[in-house]
Amino acid sequence: METPEKDKIYCENGWYNSKTDKARFGKNTRLENKNQTITGDSIYYDKPMGYGRAVKHVSIHDTSEKIILKGHLAEFFEKLDYSYITDSAMMLQYDKADTLFLHADTLKSTYDSVYFSAKKRHEKMQKKASQKKGSKQVNSSPEPFKNDSLADQHRILLAWKNVRFYRKDMQGVCDSLAYTGNDSLMKMYASPILWNEANQLNGDFMQIKLSGGTLYFIDQVGKAFIASQLDSVRYNQIKGKRTRGFFLNNELNLIRVKGNAMSIYYARDDEDSSYVGINHAKSSDMDITMANKKVHQISFLQSPDAVMNPVKGSSPAENMLDGFTWFGQLRPYNRWDIFRKPEAPEAKTEKSIKGYKKKKK
Image: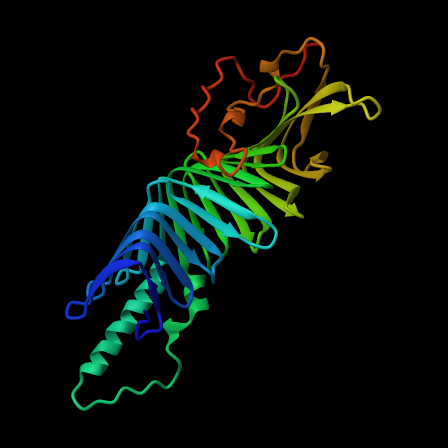
């Protein structure tokens, strides 16, 4: 069937009450409008209340945003301009190059407060104008909130509790996450960790500029660490108050560390790749350039202080920056691994150094 608004509804059983504008659809239900397709085993809709509910094998496909939300329970609140999905909730964000698979306990789609407030004020003014006796509503310009691209710019996708995501070139975990359409920023809250190729990035708060499948930059704020694992006990590490990493072809290319920058880097022989020393350094700021997915050069920008220690005779604890932890067991390794709930690693008990430790002569 087709509604007056040109929306299409398909189901194999169900009912519709024309007096109350309420309906329930079951068995192979499919609802289509201009930008969305909704499927589920059962869908209930109350038009006067602007409320909908879908259960079991729910899928919401937003073709304009190239996003698919899946789960087993979804609710829609049209008057509040938000919807959520839970029970094995998953988001798929796809483009020509790849697909991002994200899981959380709950996924919510809404609009930012500026857009929502402006829209509600506009609707209230339109309602008052239409209620005036004998008045004729004249639109001197197109309806601003019918602009799909404007709405998409102000859309916010929220995910909270046990967030895990996977894409071939990027994986991550955190407690909660927000993606804002107006600036294409993915903001990660509460113990965020991101992996890009061999690099692990974590901090108190992180945000990633991601648009059209392309990674642009990543910000780390508070206890920012960037590390790569060399073997079971050796790690290259960078630490600072905050960092910004720039991507080239979706790989880390340049990292700028601001405030109390520290690094531990294992130098290798160019011919046989054997370890020739361990560089402990600190500086107010640092720039790290990457090549072939590895650290290529470290530039100390202000007040540098560094020492090269021999590998022989050094212990792993001496070569760990204070607060560093390797979270490899938390990393999602494929699209199905986002549903795994691993235990967080215990904090390291061995003594770690703060900055670097000079060998006694």
